Length: 513
Image 1 (cartoon, one colour):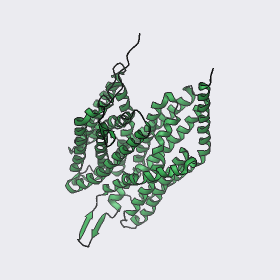
Image 2: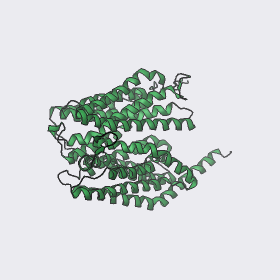
Image 3: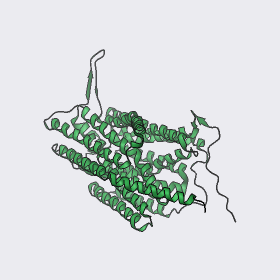
Image 4: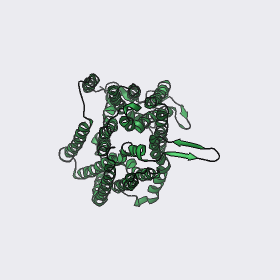
C-alpha cells in the first residue's frame, strides 16, 4: 500500500515583481515593519524604565532596568526554536507568522497603557510573538526559491536590507516621536508599525499560495504547547493581581545559569551519548568553541541598547546648532544613535563580502573570524573607557566616542554574525542540524541576557562605576579573542579531519561494487 504525499508548496505561477516571486514583497514588508517595531521599542526601553515617574517613566533603578532589558532581548531568541517547532508540527509557517504578528501588536498596545504591570505583561507577549514570527518568516523566504542557487542568495540579500531598513527607521523615528509627544506615543508609533505590517500581510498573503501551510498527517501534539500557554497564563494572572513579585536581577542571573547548563548538557550528550564518529566529535569541540565565543560577543555588543544608551542620554552632548543660511538647533534624542549600527551594516557588509572573496584560499577559518570579532568588540569598550575620563571631570562628551565604538562593534559583527549560522549548520551532524540551529539561538539568548547583567554593574548614582564596567568588558573581549585565535590551529585541524572523513565516506559510497 502506498500513501500519496501532499503536494509540494507552490506559489501562483507567473507572479513576479522585479524578477522576484511576488510573495517576496509580502514577506519583505512584514519583516521590515516587525523590525521597525522591535528596534524602535528597543531604542527607548531602558530609557523609559529609568525615567522618573513624574516625567512619564517607571522610575526603576539602573540595575533592575538593565536586567529587564537583558531578559527581554534574550527571550526573543530563546523562544525562536519553540516558534519553529509550532510552525513545523502544528500550524504551518504562514499561520505562525500571522499569529506572531498579532501577539506583537497586542504586546506593544499593552505598553501604551501606563500600567507598570500591564507593561511587563506586554513585554512577555512581544517575546512570544517575535519567537513565532522571526524564524518562520525567514523560513518562508527560503521556500520561495526551491531551486536554490544565486537567486536564493540574492533574495536573502534583499531581505536582509529590509531588516536593516526597519531597524534604521524604527530607531530614528520612535524616540523622536517619544521625545516630542511623550513615551507612550513612542510606543504607539511602534504599535502602528506592526499594524501596518500585519495589514499588508493579510491583504497580500494570497501571493504566498500554499507555501508554509502545515501538511496533513505530520502534526505533533498540542499538549506541550497547551502546558506552556497555561503556565504563561498563570504567570500573567499572578503578575496582574500583584500576587507575584519578581526580582529581575535574580531571574536574569538564574536564567544565565540555566541556559549555560542547558548548552553544556547538550554538548556532553553530543560528545558521549549521541553515537557520533571520532571526526564528528571533533566538530562538537569546534561548535562548543563557537557557541562560547558567540555568547561572549553578544554580551558586549548588546550594551548598545543598555549601558551605551544610558551613556548617550546622560553624558553625551546631543545638542546641535546651525547658523547659515538658517539658524537652527536640534536636541537629538539618545535613541536615535541606535540607528548607527544598521546603517553601518548596510554600508560595510558588501565591503566585508568583497574582502573574503579577495582573500580566496587565505580566507580565515570561522574560529579566526570569531576571534577577530571579539577583539573588535573589546577595542570598542576601550574607546568608551577613555571617554569616561571627561565624564568624571564633569563634562559631556561628543557623540564621536560612541560612533567610533559602534564602528568597531560593526566590524566585529560582520566578522562573527554572518558566518556563525552557516558554520554551525556545516559542522552539525546531519541528524542533529535542527537542534544545533536552536543551540545557536541559545548562544545569542545567553549573550543578550549576560549583557543585561553586565550593564547592571553600572549605577547612575555612582558615575565612577562606568569606566570600571567598560574596562572590564575590554579585557574580557581581548582575552576571549586571544584565546579563540590561539585555539584556531587546533580547531582548524579538527574541521579538516572531519572534512576528510566526510570526503572518504562519500568516495566509499560512490565506489563500484
